[in-house]
Image 1 (cartoon, protein in one colour):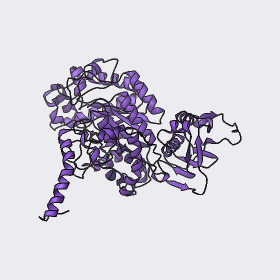
Image 2: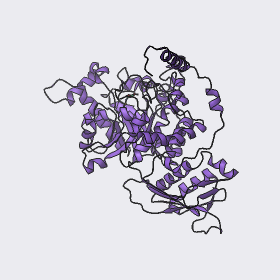
Image 3: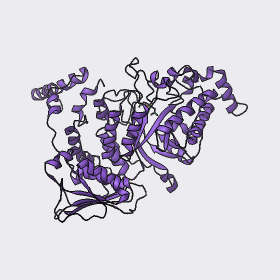
Image 4: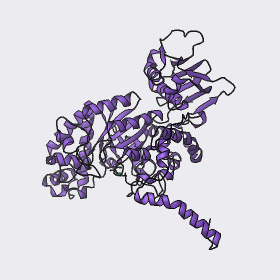
Length: 556
Ligand code: TNX
């Protein structure tokens, strides 16, 4: 209502202000709103997702309303060909169902969920077909990952407590024929565990949701100025000294993952067809390592690139990393070196290195040193039989194929084409669409420093995005591996805030990673999201249902 000076309008204004007051106060003071405790304590309601609201939305869903539903109860068998037996067994375990040996006929009247290997027409692996009939649920896929995604679709269609629901009775699955295939092979989430540490349990919680929404790359940002979060046998002080402190408490006791923690995360992720991508950020953003082993650094937060021992140190760390992370990739950071803020120019050996690398007749330039450092990282990572990844600043080094560039600088859109023209593959993480440390809505908590001119990174903004840059040839499009949404955690300390920033935006990221092209339908997507939010809330996750949920995360 516009205020026109009249008494009714004045009264309406006062009412509005009165209503907003508790919210405003709670935002400013970080107090919980009255009524919130009751909300949390409410008994979870079973929330199955209707076919029309599956996320990601499958490419084809044919419903057969006239056909009887499939009755899922504790007597249903799971049966699979050898090739798909892993996801079949995982489904059987998660619903507490019995497996029927391959080839065995079920007793008369018994129904089953049957896995069948079948080649499907899809460029990217992970395609599946899921046919729900009254006698049988049939899952067809060429690879186990596709069969796994079919099971995740099934789990969305069931109440979130399906196991308990089944032992107490039965559940109806609507007759339907569903086909789907992912658009991109890279469907990622990054969690920064360096600025604030997030332990194994939290990380597994993220993996659970990634699996349910068919995401398949978990990038862990393991080191930064605020902390080093991984035990390295050869250099124990990296974690015992470098692991101390975090963004909000420089004196916090050391927090880091042991080798066993990593093995446990990697196994948990692999069981859900998720590859873990470790990142050690170098040569900048390395303040924590510099506190532990200053002899390899510039006195501030950047490696000394002119000291041969530096490369021995990094090589050893990378060797341990490769032994711990069986995935194909190692990320070496390479972002925000800002050579003018390093002490390189005051270090005679670095100046000499710059002179060597700079074309004859010119004053020594540090950008050549930065490029040489990146070149050596690529070599070392390849020596450990991994594919190197770096943030997009690395394009300036002029390196060639055999590595992946992760584009994040939205103000450098040309970086994508430069990388592709250099023969490199690209992951798209433009900060204005994919940065989950930015606020999800106007006036909400989020990283304060970016000045994100395009407005908050809302669910609507994410799903309105068509990620594939225009004007690329087929060969270039092939090298756009996919998308990844990073959650930087300078401001994210608690699990509650971590969940608030991830959910429901993680589902929007999955939608963009799976759908074949942009269908700009943010409003319809927000509607489809409603049962997902209800389900997350029923499970006790601190999902963002709307602005009203935002107030309590002001202070982590
Ligand atoms: C830039 S993105 C960074 C991070 C910050 C982030 C905050 C990137 C490669 N570097 O170190 O956490 O902005 O939004």
